[in-house]
Image (cartoon, rainbow, N blue to C red):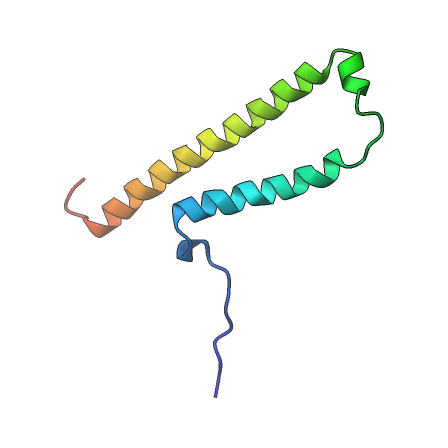
Length: 87
């Protein structure tokens, strides 16, 4: 008797769950980076903390916009495959 091995498939997760999973994955990498503790005031003392924050925010906004773009494109393709008569 052959047992089916459970595999992780993004299609099984809803889009909301995928976003939450992605966010949790990203944040799990951010925690160890902040725990290094060299000199927490180093970037603040040289005035570069705002540059670092701006770059991080820009990256996150870019990721979110890209995910929204992909979601719209995938849903358009799903609708096209379900209803091939409507072009």
